[in-house]
Length: 93
Image (cartoon, rainbow, N blue to C red; front, side, top):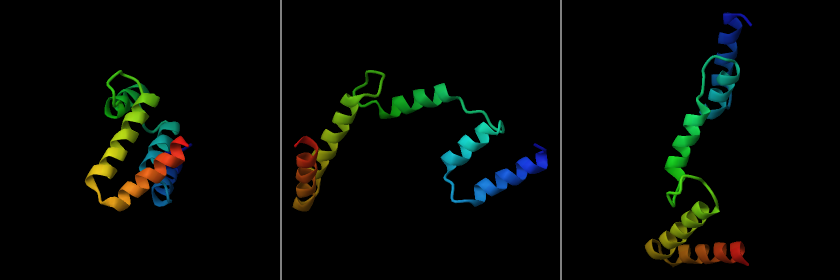
């Protein structure tokens, strides 16, 4: 692939209905940029790990769900409590 063809493909990628993640992964596959996936994974785990155990698992999801329900039931009027109750009923039975 010539540099002109690569430039043309990159311009097409940015013009299309692609989001930045798709563009980044596409440029990575085309060997235009290098993504350090291990570092990206560490950063994501640091941001999303709710219980601080160093891994993402169902416990983290449960903590986020509990926070979500707590915020809906305490900080928003009764219509949100209905939504949270509906979600809990749908989720747990």
